[in-house]
Each structure stands twice: as structure tokens, then as C-alpha cells.
Image (cartoon, rainbow, N blue to C red):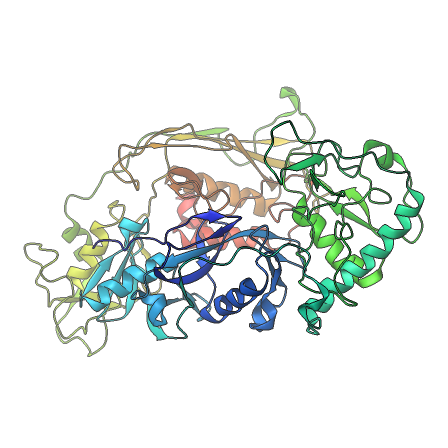
Length: 619
């Protein structure tokens, strides 16, 4: 299945432009935490295009057209989406597709998530699915797009090739995305004049404008007290017209957050962390120089003011990575958007509390074995469990043949049990006729034998079988964890919530290596970031029980796997495998620490779901 060409992206002042005199469908997209570009709806894209025509450097209030997007604003100048209640900023882009593709026809393909809601596919995947659908292909493999899914059009379902789990999908007709032809007029200069009309009275614009009004009042009072600022430095000789000369802000030592044109009066440009500017403000156009919220004064974050006391009545708000290299601008924008518009007061920036990841240093003499758990280390090598000789033998071991199957769906191939398996012609096994049906021994769910053979052959092939309906495990389930070492011992420190109890420390260490045949890309190198990884349990009866089960899970290679990191988006790397660990020793700022009263019960349930129970550990 060939993949349709992606939209042409030609950045000009932050905006993409289609080729001259060629009709293109415009789709605005935002970048999520997994580095995937997610499309806005057609209604939102029409709204953005309308604002873009009026002011290419203004801001778009998404809540005006979609109630679910009330907190969001798009700043067209910086091409970022800003969430006002949290301060989160994400890149956006303006992408172009062929008018005959799915977005040009208003066709949306969606899959059903665990909550029963429908989620739209990425636009390139949507176009690929629609292309196969129009050509009347019975199924579509998405592996060429980086996803291990199969799309079945007859049953309108999506199947995970690894887990064999199925989800429903649907094709929906919606508003067609906006169409553009040729080039777009040049961006208007900022700010827009007062003749641009009356300001919008919606709650989103009122929030932005009230924030600006409050900040302008504060800045005016500070400007009267502050000494005259030195003139901005001139651009280098021969520099192009319109070059921005940058001077450091007094708020952030060493951070260039102010910008002024080289020619003409000094005018601070909008910093990356400021609220997106609206085309209009109460009382007419805003005065140049009054939109920068990162001003000197009470918001100073240097080491001098860090030692100074906060003035009475001025709210203090913690900011992550204030003097570090991490992203500080979203947090700063969130603060000013919420607090300034609510109270009209300056905000004193303080450092956010840092998570306590590790305990105080421990000498070797203070490290003790865990009572009731033999040894202090477990190592795993390359796959050591014997594979079953024949997938058919494994399936028959756990199934009973059904002579008169009921007239219901096989949840693997989505064909009726009274008909042949959907894998007929795709998979051939001697002795397994496509119409044979079997029942799993413990749970009683029924499937085509050929479907279960196909599911087993596409998995780890370790001699175990897992019911795709109820997840009951038959045999001993093993995973694809790379070789490594697990250490565990007692340290003389207590976790929050367990004041009178010592702590079990677990240390996992997995080196980089080459993927084996059971991994996503055999023969390719995999990375192992963040090792050794330290995890913590309380040294009580339930904590020791969890440790014993974690040792069993480690020996079965179930703790880690090789996949794509949810945090960084990196593929072919070692990631956690559905068994949560506590990696934060003295706090719970990230959600991976203590106190957490339900953690031990939750991780026991996760281990049971992987087929690791106390009875098995004792055996």
C-alpha cells in the first residue's frame, strides 16, 4: 500500500504556504508529547484561517468555535498553541494536502478508545486509510507508517499485530477542511490599528485583555520608578533591514527575552513565554512596549532577589527550572495568565520544589539483605526459555474442540464462528482446518483454532497463551526484556508514609545491545536510557511480597521491553512494561513516589495481570 504524499511545508515568517496558483486543502496541526502532529477539526481550521486573513500575526481563541478548547489560544506570530490554565505551549503548523484527499472531502477516520470515545487518526494515516478504502482493499497494514496495526474494512476494526487486540473504527463525514489557492497576502504589522473594530466580548478574549491591562498598569508604575534604560545595541554593519537587536532581560540573567528593532524607537517584542497577543484591546490598540510581561521589578529572579523577602500581599508562584536549561516560558505564561488577570498583582517567582529521587548516602556496611528473600541479585541472559516446537500443539494443549459452535463472532478475525476463519488463505497449518472452533479450558471463550494459531505465531512463542477477551493466561507467560541485572537490598532510611520502616531498594541495570528475533527490529541496536534505575518499596510484609513477585517477573523478562518511549518519543529503546515502579524516594511530585496508599495493591494487580501471582512465586 503506497503512502500518499504528505503536505508541502514551506515556512515563511512561521507560516506554511502552498505553491503558487495550486489549490490545496489547509489542515492546522499541533505537536503532541509523542512527537505526532495531531489535526484540529475542520471547524477549528476554518476559524484559524479566517483570523489569519485578518491578522497574520495575531492570536486565535479556539474556545470561540469549540467549547472543549476553551483554555487554548494560538499565537500566529510564534506558531504555538498556549493553554492558559497550565501555561503549556506546543508548536503548531499549517499543512497542505490534495483537495481530492480525505480532508478535502470532509472524511474523518476514527478509532474507539478505552473510554468508548472516538479519536481521529493522524491526518497522514487518515488519508492512507481512505485511499485503501476507495480502492476497495479488504485490509490495510499500517507498519509502513510506523504502527503495528492492521485495518480490516469488512469488520471496520483495527487490530494490534503484537497483542491481537481489536478496536472498532469508523468513517465519518464532516465539514470539509478549508481550501486555499495561490499565495497569501503579506502579514500585517503589529499592532493592528484601532480601526480594526470593537474588541471581542467572549470570555477568552476578556481573559487575555484583562491580563494585558493589569500587567500594563503594573509596568507603568514600575517604569516611573525605574532609572532610564540604556539605548539598545545597534546591529552589526551591513546587517539586513529589520534585524532584531537582543538585549538581556533583568528578569532572567543571561536569557535573551527582549527584542527591539534596529531602527526606530525601542519596542520590546513578544517573548516566547508571554500570552499571545489579541488583535484588539479594550480602549483601542495597545501601546507599543506594553505587552511584555517579563519586566524587571518584583518579578526579578536573580540570586539577589532570591535572598530578599517577598513583599506583603504579593503572591509567590514556583517556576520549574528557573535558572536551568529547561523550558521556563510556559510556566511563566501560565502564572501571568492566571494570577495577574485574577488579582492584578505582581508575582514573585520562586523555585519549584525539586523531587527527591534518591536517599541520603548509605555506606556498604549499612546495606543489608532483605529478610525472607534469598540472595541480593538476579541476572538474565539472552532468551533462555524453550520455544514450543509447534504453535498448533500449544493451542491444542489449552483448547477443547467445539462440534457445534454458536452463531457469534470470533473476536480475533471478526468472522462468525459458524463460518471459516478470516485467516483462511493467509495462514496455512497442516491439520488445522479453517472452520475448526475450540473453547479455552478455564475461561470458556471460543475462537477459530486457526485464529489462535495466528495469534500465537505473531507473539513471543514461549509456550503460553493469553485469552484476547478476558486476558486469562494459560501456561507461563514470558516477555522480551533484554539481558540485564536486578539487585535488591535494605537501606536504613524510611519512605514518606512509612516512618518506622526501612526501605527496600531495587536497582535495575540493562546495557545497550542488539535486538533479538523477539524484538520489534531484529538485528538493530537498541538504547537503554537512564540506567541503572533505582526503585523503592517499604520493608513490610506487603512490600516484601511485591519484591518476591517482581523477582519472578524479572526472571520471566516482564519488567522491561523494547519499544517507543512515551516521555521522549525515542524508538528502539528500553521502556517499562506495564508494571509500575516507584522511582522517587523522598517525595511524590512526579506521581512516581511516596506517600501512595494504594500503590502496593495496584502493583500486585498489575503483576497478577501478567500471570505473576504469590502462588507461582512460592512454587
